[in-house]
Image (cartoon, rainbow, N blue to C red; front, side, top):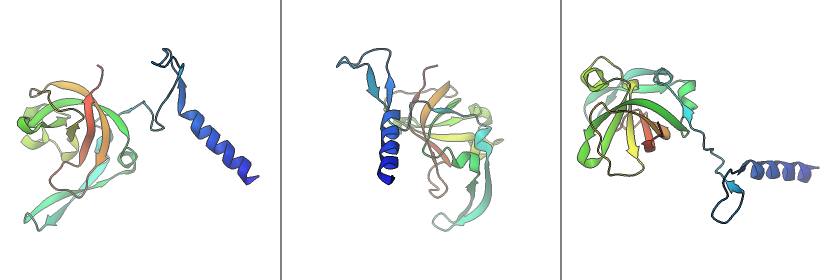
Length: 166
């Protein structure tokens, strides 16, 4: 009985990885394999990212108090998930391809005052090369990574970021 249940579970997991394709692949197959992580990113808003609280914590390596995040349950569910988020591009270091996505334009962003650290997301692009201008508004796709411990990165980061089809 246990082996029958195990076989059914394995079969259903394998089957969910295959989806019908409207166009045959190069080999002529009408089915293609999709990763079990899915191809449907979660569309989130900046309101979603507000599910975080901060407390001041002393960081001796920099001799400074900084805001330490405690992520709420809604944000924790996003860690490691592919997401879509719309915002304003902020160049941090163009030569190093270092950018952030902000809920607000540069004049009202977190770095300039008036907004909290939950209103910016670090961008780690899949491909280097494209240069962005300040306040370009885009929807980006990437894997959300939460950061509570590395004071040299933002609390939210999109890894493998790329512009989503808009």
